[in-house]
Length: 88
Image (cartoon, rainbow, N blue to C red; front, side):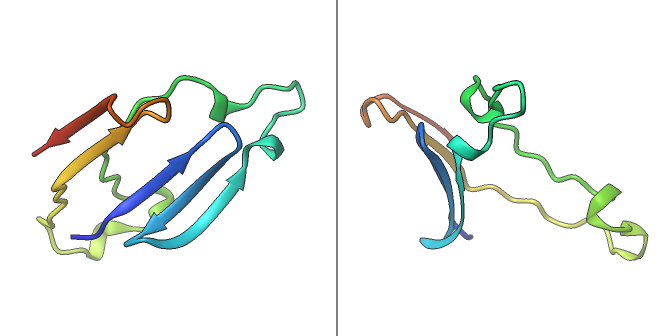
């Protein structure tokens, strides 16, 4: 398994894979022209294995393939004691 991490604050979102930094977005630069910022709205977690569309043509793929998630862990920035976890 690999560990994907998203560190999301009021100022930025940083993505990591196995503790290696991949990407960052400065949320002050993510406002739309009308001032709306989609990253400063309530969100939910969706684990999804989308096949096709802009990911390419899956017609030559051998199915079934495995999409396996070991666990999902969410921490609140206000207190690490406020933790929501899902273990499969």
